[in-house]
Every structure is written in C-alpha cells, then in structure tokens.
Image (cartoon, rainbow, N blue to C red):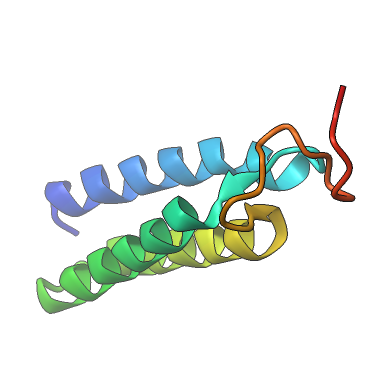
Length: 93
C-alpha cells in the first residue's frame, strides 16, 4: 500500500464522516443542483483511483458517491424550493 493511497483514503473517510449528519438530520435539505454533481465527482474520483491502482481509495470514493446520491434522494431540495420549507413542504417559521 502506497502512502499516497492512505492519504486519499483518509481524506475521503474524513469527508464522508462530515456528510453523515446531513443524512441523520430529518430537517436538513441540500439543493439537488449541488448534491448530484458532487456524487458524480466522487464516482469520477473512484474511477481515477482504479486506473492508478489505489483500490482502497477507489472503494472509499465510490462509497462517498453513494452517500451523496442518498443525500440527493432523501435530503435533496427540488429546484426552486425555498430553503426555509420544512420536510413536509410547509413554510417554516
């Protein structure tokens, strides 16, 4: 295992850990315009790591992409929706 792979793996795990609170907080919303491209970038990173033979970093990046797809699906705010709307669609105080 190369030291660079460990750096990429550590950074990816760190970023995933800070994304998890978004999934756990039912009231949080994230614009789909940013969460879907973020997921795609993670999958591109995973493909890049595969090409340079960093399998652990590739798996972690694919997991990061999957986490962002879940964020987009469950916490994604439709385009044009005001950020102060509650999860059920009513305007928050």
